[in-house]
Every structure is written in structure tokens, then in C-alpha cells.
Image (cartoon, rainbow, N blue to C red):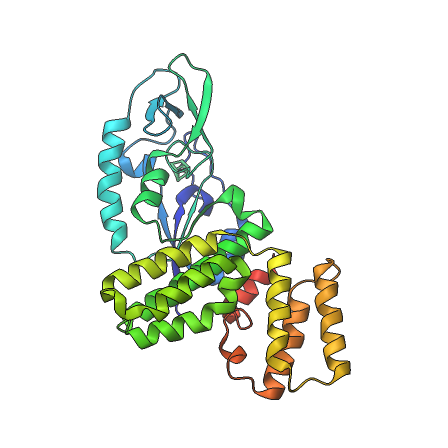
Length: 315
Ligand code: SF4
């Protein structure tokens, strides 16, 4: 299968581009995720033209529009870096990225939580690095995470899921994004969305049923914006349990009392934290195959892409 293109801060791949000549190699990224993802490395500071090693920099001033300044000598690199950022973002538009993994806490690459210092040198509020911040503002639909959050299993799973949903969305657009295909796309993602946000499932459902009320471009834009917002909300144990209980309704006619009892017990064990989500999902998939349930067998919630599943298994 063609690898999925993901942008990444170069130092996370082991490139010695940091201010002190070191790297921040992340083995999970290169060895596990690297089997499925093709990396598009970006080091803002080196690509902008700064040497290795170089003087460390930090953010200063207004957290909403911070300045990038060298720590010891106070050289302000903001204007030059912003100019470079503009050009690099234009290039990345053509790169077909399905996600981006940023180095955390970097004044250039960070996407949030970067300390912004006051002019007197005191640590102040948090902000985003010049490149990282500009990237997420320019490409709000492209899944983004930093390496700090990537090591939180729930946030990592959420990121991987968003990458795959975004990929399916781009494939849908490539196929021409006809109204009937939007209905199919939506139908196949219903349980996935429900596991993140029942509220957004309602909003998306109303958009799809009212597809003729808006021009096609507007409906697509509204749909993907709402879908992205929904997926930002984490799928919790409680929400997953609700989805699993909802699924039982599709087997009402088929399951014997004993089978239903067993399934409810497995869902309860998941709810209580005794078994992982994959256990009730595997049992449900067994019934989906046995009864050839047409709606459930197309649900991405129950059938994540094999690669998606492999990556989740490391969570
Ligand atoms: S954090 Fe960003 S700017 Fe700093 S070394 Fe890594 S890629 Fe380069």
C-alpha cells in the first residue's frame, strides 16, 4: 500500500539539526509509524538558513504574535522567519500531507504550550512557535500533534484515527465528491463519529439530509469542518460503551438470549476497564460476519484500516 505522507519536525527523525547539534530521535516514530508513513521533514531554523550549532532562541512578547529572539544576544529573527514560513507553507500545500508531527516546546516548530517570555525575561503565557502556529492556522483540517502528546496513548490513537479519516475524505474528494457519495461517506462513519461526539453526529446528519439546501462547495466545507471538530473530542470509555450498546440493537432479531447475555457481559467488562475495546469489537465483528449485517459491516468504527489497527495495537 502507498505510504501516507506526514510532515514532521526533522529532529524527530534523528537529524542533528537542533541548536546544539543534537537530535530528538523518536524510535516509535521512525521504527513503528515509519513502516506505514512517508515523512516530509521540515526544520524551520535550518531551512531558514541558520547554522548548526547556533544560538538558542525563544519567544518574546505577545503570545498571540510572539517574536523569535536569540536568548543571549537578543537578535530578532521574526521578520525573516515569517517570510520563510509563508513560502514553505505554499510549498507544503502541494505535498499532499495527511498529518504533521511537530517537535513540542520549540519556538519555531511547537504548536502550543511554548513558553513566551516577557520583555523583562520572565516566563509568561504559552503560545505556538512561528512555523507550527502558522501551519495549524493555514491547514486547520490537517491532523496535527506534537511529540509530547504523541506519547499519550489516547491522544496518539486520536491522531492516527484523524489521519485515516482525513485520508478517506481526500479520497472521497478525488472521486468527485458527489452528493450521494457524501451520504455514503457519512453513513460509513456514523458509529465512529458517535464514539467521539453524539452532538456532532446530529449536526452532520442534518447537513447530509439537507444537502440540496447549500451549494456543493459549501456543504463539503461545512461537513469536513464539523467532522474535524467532532474528531478532536476524545472517544472515551463511556462514549464507546454507548456505541457498543447501540450496536446490539442491530442484532435484536438474530442473537439468542445466551449470546446477547455474553455480549452484554463483554461490553460491561470493557466499561469497567477489565478488557480493551478490541475485545467487544472482535465479538461484534464475529456476529456481523455470521449474520451478514449490511450496515455494520461497512462501519469504519468496526473495521479500521489494517494499518490503522496495527498502529492502535501499539497503544
Ligand atoms: S524543533 Fe524544529 S526548528 Fe528545532 S531542530 Fe527540530 S525541526 Fe528544527
